[in-house]
Image (tube, rainbow, N blue to C red; front, side, top):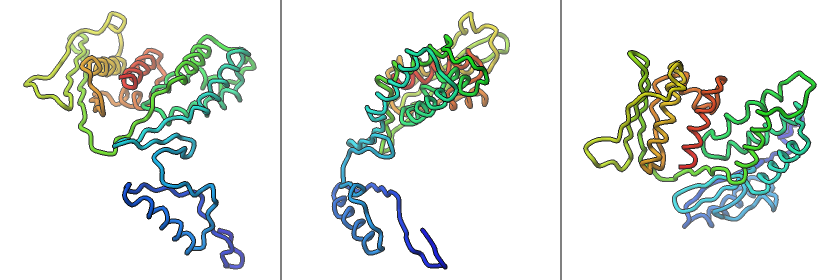
Length: 274
């Protein structure tokens, strides 16, 4: 609001959105317009979108279908970002400023997708953004990341939000280093009826024999996600992670350690593709 000598000269509301039951949505829409008129708000014609089940909202494509809300990136934005990446690959150069722009585009894209599937694939891009060197040529890690994103943006995972309660799968995973290294998983599907629960226990692969507990716990969670996928487990899933550092890294979707970062990438890939 603009105020001159204590008198309000102009007030405005930027955007307003609401959800209403199907049977009353038409009347609710007209009531909001009527209320705005009484309060003295001027509504722009292009802001008065009639009730609908699909629209573009704050740069995101939102679709309400049945008992779910599907959020995804508009096709035009995905195409523009892929073209931006293609230009970088053709020129074989990425400046810090270009890296910052691309990270912004990919960050917005990531927010509208399921999980943290792409966080682990922007490390080289981040390093280039904050680099002080004058070398702008594409490195192998940066090239690999750009090609990965270009391919992934062809069909990124959509974010699906249920509007009704859904039962959870529960995945328990743990790793132990005492008396030898062992990995274990226990799966409790939301529709489980049998007396026992599917479980796995064994040793990690040879390349993890000398890994610390942080890496082992992340590997165990990856194994749990794969175990759930083999049982055709779908829907919301709760993962038990018995290590705070591993849990934080999984939530962030990336880590400083390369092995941990690759494992986290596998975890989110498994979650979003099954």
